[in-house]
Image (cartoon, rainbow, N blue to C red; front, side, top):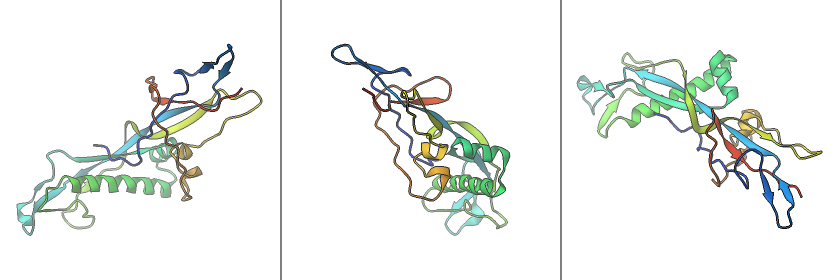
Length: 206
């Protein structure tokens, strides 16, 4: 099951569907739509928890598995984070991302435990502590964006250049600065080809 790391981004279309967008105005003038934003789906990275158990309060001798299968949780990451996880470098950044996934799987484990039961989902060093596997790549996800890019620059002008963190409404480079809002209202059909998430209309020029 997937743990939502970020709110799913709602994709919007321009004034018309497609990558070459134009609007026919009264009198026959055509105003092209510039700086169309293309958004690409993020990628889930997951971990499994093995040996998770639960028992009635005060009765650890009656322990049973939390689930018949391993507990699984995933977190959505952008393209820069995916590269760090894939290469396990830089080590400090990898450890931070891996810890985020581990926290997600421990939370998922605790969610599966019924009321009135204790569990070892949060145990780390005890003899009965469950084992959390190393992160592995999952499936494309709508929970975040892998990257984004603008196309159709206006004549003599340019379009914004966002890094993968800015595509997700975060500060450039994923710093701790105040996040910016990038969500938009759904106003069109989502692109379905490959892992492309959709398009967003940009500025108009007269």
